[in-house]
Amino acid sequence: MDDDTAISYKALERGTSVVTSDGTTLGTVEGVLDNVKENIFDGLVVRSERGALFVDAPEVARITRREVTLSIDAEEASRLPDYEPGAPEYHANPRAGRLGRFFGGSWKRRR
Image (tube, rainbow, N blue to C red; front, side, top):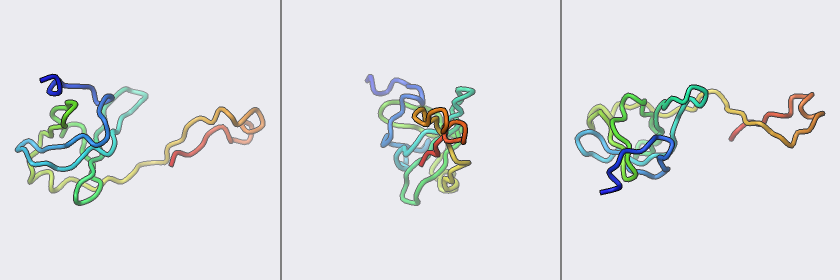
């Protein structure tokens, strides 16, 4: 089936099912974490019954269009840490103009 073909983490969509190595559904993908500068997959934020959980990249065994399979079982998944956002992220604000850039207004904080 075409959905079983492995895909890049960059093509992974929010809401994709996340299952453990023993077939237990953990939750759904809330977000993908990556290091853009180095083009490295860093992990996932998974929405579960416990809330938002952090799944580190080495714990992700396979990503397909239909689901993400982890390399850990349900018992290990029960010990996953809660997701805590890191440092604030900023993005360029091209509408700041010359004066705005002079006063540091060319960057806006992401929410």
